[in-house]
Image (cartoon, rainbow, N blue to C red; front, side, top):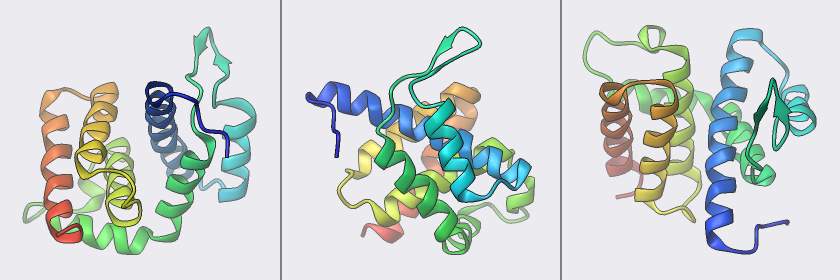
Length: 154
């Protein structure tokens, strides 16, 4: 396992992995890319690479793989939890496609990554939401993940 030496570098690498996981799952959702091909594409061409003059942060590859593969493997369970926390009249289809992936990733970590503190999961995905959305949507991420956390990490 190549872990960055200091905790600050590891934290940045995990943040980059989370953002990349959301992007990968969005791509999978839109293009129906097979999981193995998707992971390979991100390993080869995205994680830590420069694309159109943007330097992508080095991501913790094993963490990225775990989140992406875990969301795919447990999507029905994750989606059922998510649906149970949406307001009446809301469905997954009504959610923005990027928002859906942010919430799926966050819920996966709450379910499967007990090694990651609850507060870290929620704050990290609020940060990811800020990369795509305004404060209102970030608060939505906070509310949904907090509600799921109360159920799965009681």
